[in-house]
Figure (cartoon, rainbow, N blue to C red):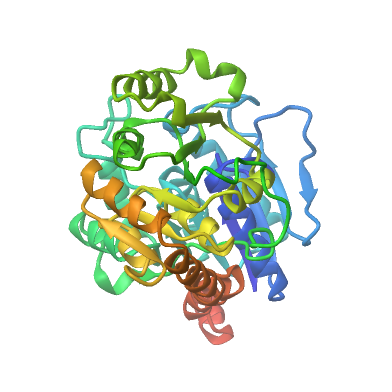
Length: 393
C-alpha cells in the first residue's frame, strides 16, 4: 500500500518519544513492503525537501509557516497551509491509499487534504487535551477540535484501553475505534551490549522521563527512605549542563535534601535515544510512571523488571507478579516496600526480567504492531470498483 504518515511537528528524523515512534512504525511498515511517505513541517531552511531514510521511507518537508521550531500548541494557524500543500502534492502525482495522522493538529490537516481526494484517514492522538478549557486563541478548545476530529476520520487507533475509554467519553463512536499498542525496537533495546558503569555493591534503580511533577519523581525520592543503600538514577529533562537552572531538577534536589536521601539520588539529564539501552542495562529495576509506557517497554526489552503505579497504561504493559510489581499510585511507602523486596530478591528479579524480555519481544515488537496497523489500513482501502464508482460520481 501507499501510506502517507502525517506528523507535522514530530519528524522521524528528530529525537524524542513521538519522533521515534513515528520513525519506528514507518520503518516497520516499509519492512513489510509498504511504500511510506512521512509529511512533516519544515523547521530548518537548510534541510532537503525530501530525505530518504535507510529503510526507504521518504520524509517530505512541507513549508507551512516559518522554517523554525514552533511549540506544538501554536501550530494550528499553519495547518490550513499545510493541508493545501499536502493536497497539491498528492494531486500532482503520488496519491496515497491511506493517510495516518499523528497528534490532533496533524489530523486536522490530514482530514482537510484527504477528504477532497477520497483518501481514508486514520488518526492517532497519542494524548488528549486535558479539558474543554484549553482554548486555542479565540476559537474552539483543543478538546472540541479533538471531539470533532474523532468523528470525522475513518478510524481512530488508540494505544491503550484507557485511551479507548477516554475517546468514547468525548464522543468517538466505538465502531470507529481500534486498539493497537505502541511498539519497541527489540533490535536496539536488548539485554546484550554495553552498560553504563556503576557501583556493583549498590543496587541501581532507574527512572526515565521529563522532570515534571506528573511523572511521579517526587514519589520516587520519598520512596528511597524505605530502600537503604540503593541509588536512584533519573534520566531525562534538559542536558546535564542545564540541570542547575531547571525547575524540576531543583525541586527534586530540594526534596531529596528534605528527606535526607540526596546522596543516593543522581540526576543525569537528557541523553540521546541511542544511548538509552546502556542506561537500562545498568539497572536492577525500572520505576515507571503511568505516563511512562515507552520507558517501561524499552526496559522490558533490555531484560529489566518494572515497578510502577497500578493505573493507566502500566496495568496493560506490566503483568503484575510476572514481569514486575504494580503498587497503589501516589503511595511512596508502598513503592519503597516493593522496591526493597525486589532489590533483596535476586531470584525474583531474574524471573521477572526473563518474563519481561519475552513479553516485550512477543507482544510489542514493531513488526507485530505494524502488521496490526496495516490490517486497519487494509480494512479502509477502497476496492477498484468502489474507486471507479466514486470517480464517476
